Amino acid sequence: MEKIIIQQNSHWEGKTYKGLLQRSVINDLLRKLEMRHIQVLTGIRRCGKSSIFRLLINELMKEHDPKTILSLNMDDPMFYFVWENPAALYSLVETAEKITGVKVRYLFLDEVQVVARWENFVKSTYDSEIFKKIFVTGSNSSLLDTEYSTLLSGRYFVDKINPYSLKELFANRGITDYYSLIKNKVTALQIVDECLEWGCFPE
Image 1 (spheres, rainbow, N blue to C red):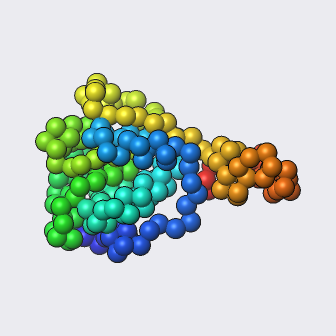
Image 2 (cartoon, one colour):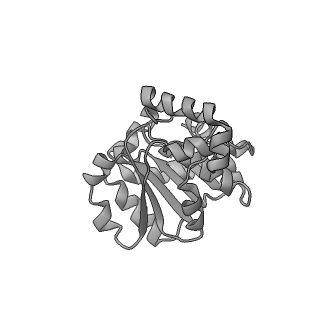
């Protein structure tokens, strides 16, 4: 278990996550970092929710000890014992704190919908102020099957994540205005062609 937790938290070594494209939603998420509200990211699978987690972790590392940030991908089969027992999430946090010797302040739960009644754990830890901020992701349909919106009412923000927009793809290639669009017309057309052929999912 310790090995899996360490693998999922390579930022503990102080190294930022590489190869990530910037997303337009990041600025809005960063503005809400200092608010205690639980941050929920919804969206279809493979639209980039986990990558946005890594972008946020990169930003948090600029001002906070990386070991205070815990990220858990609940989809991992090694966490099967948590899927029907949300109370076991406490043991994962305790194991992480035992490994690092540092209290977890920022908790990221990826694909949280695989954990039955996950919202009870999140509500309890939020109300007890165990963490400074909690982030969760899940697919739209799966989260809608739970009662999180009722149980967490008044305690969360929800942002829907979509695959890349053309504006995001252009911006990551330095095309940010009409001048740069004209100057990089060939690149812009290549991006459009790729989107038409493969779609705009990160993969």
